Image 1 (cartoon, one colour):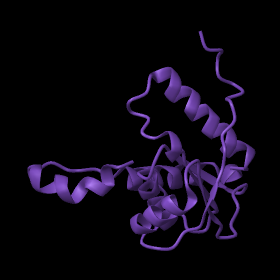
Image 2: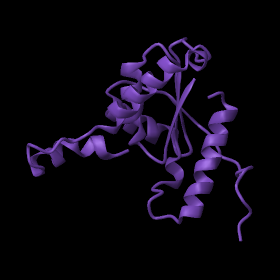
Image 3: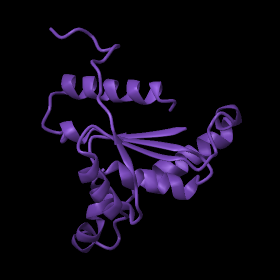
Image 4: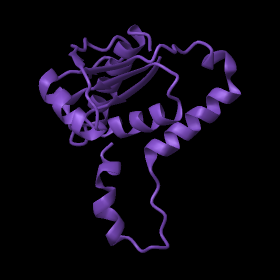
Length: 153
């Protein structure tokens, strides 16, 4: 299973690019939207939240820029290339998997698309469906205290 984590909805655009590039694999998307946005938090807190999320994703087996592109493009000179992180991540992952067939062989291929959020499921699902342009069913999860985080000082 390929895991994608974000503090909100922006990561759905990365997930979308991954699914378009590597549709044969299973995916798990986690939105820690109950604690978003991360941007106003200290680096220590962001680190702790990230480790909690990654640990949860590991136990389960497994950005906003693209949404703003139509508004940004008219403001940027035509000779400036605007890169899409989703396409870059998908391309790099596809390349890495080609070079590491032993890891690629471990990935599920059942067509599973699993969505989890730390916030209200209906709220997340409705907004996620608008972003992806297709229905999604999310489950609510609770993140536990980070097991590998250094103790708070």
